[in-house]
Image (cartoon, rainbow, N blue to C red; front, top):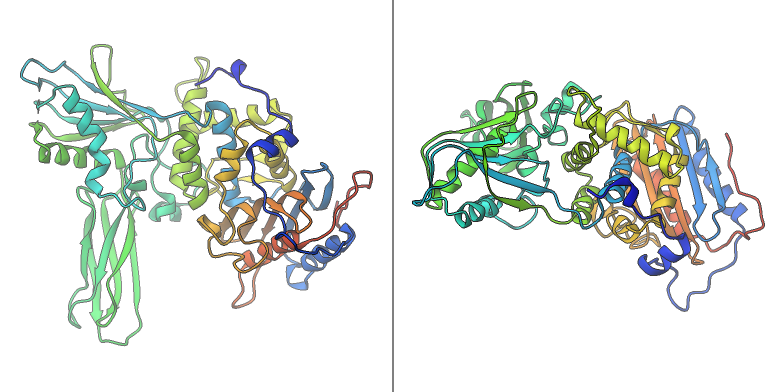
Length: 521
């Protein structure tokens, strides 16, 4: 990690945007009718003032990056649940502290050096550091390919025989396997998968569910090996055309997945996600099997360690090699585009451990250390630290709070940061990719709006960048909490409607004019 003192100050906004950010304006030859910003304000006010929003809470801020002027704000200082807009802060923090080229390095040790025959008399230890890239899902690779870098390290070290165990040491992260403020229900879903310094396939496996003959149990098949999961199949096949109902439940701390439901005989097979407890144990077992398949004999078993166990590595161990992650810019883009909670938590925990100092007590968690680093980051760059109150980094905690004002300040800052291009490129693009790939299609916002989404049951947010039809570069944060939507409508549509208004707006605000504000300020 680069020391704090060695970090560069941001470039100017104009310079950063000129050299590193491609902004989408109106199509060449398009005639844009001039409009006053007051007209845009009126349209947004009318939208926010729809009667069905009377019990809801809005927080909005829109600022021109060209002039620095606030075009519109509505309760911009209100603390609301940002949901996955929290990831904007984690990505900015990581890129600032570690740099876009930084890689998470995982060292591999042996308790004894290989002898002349390639035999390790003791254990082989993978000492995890929170690398989120150990996955095949969505990459086109096979599951066994995840372990190829580890096999290569052992082969280059001359290891042919391990008399001891394969140990997955996840003690680098301190704290429980869940984020602060998560609910018990979260822990049974893929988005609440356990946090571990050694993770595998985003810490959830897949189970294929298929019908059998009516009256017989449904067919259940685990698609990932060595998970340690056991299936308690209570799902029955029913007559074709019947209503389908299917549920899974794994009690926290157990490895038995209870499967309930009715599967019509004419239902096609589908895959269901199952979180895997103690993912470091899964990694150790899967690595052991792959090593044996690749001709490296392993006499011992697979085991794991996690906090508060002591590390498996000591001063007498021999370092065999290391496995490096992709550069941080790719890790940030991976969790931003897909809004992937675990990958965010792993990067956040890694930042926390890099920021840990000798004055921190042993019981202080990696998450606590990362939150402290986030507060220092916000204060160092004079961002509104008091308007950011997080329990954890992914946004899954309903206790996390932020304001539209703070999020816009962060986005403005990152637009002039040395890592501006990597940061902005990491965001989903409307109608193109990530969590915005199906949103704002066939509108002027498509391939224009770059923004982070955020969704919980009663929280929706959308914050990022857009270029107006007149070529004005805007930064915005839209937050909507506690909105009860009518049947057939989703709160995301109301956020998207404002983003489309911004993209289609053809006017400009003169630098000398005062800021345009809405109600409630």
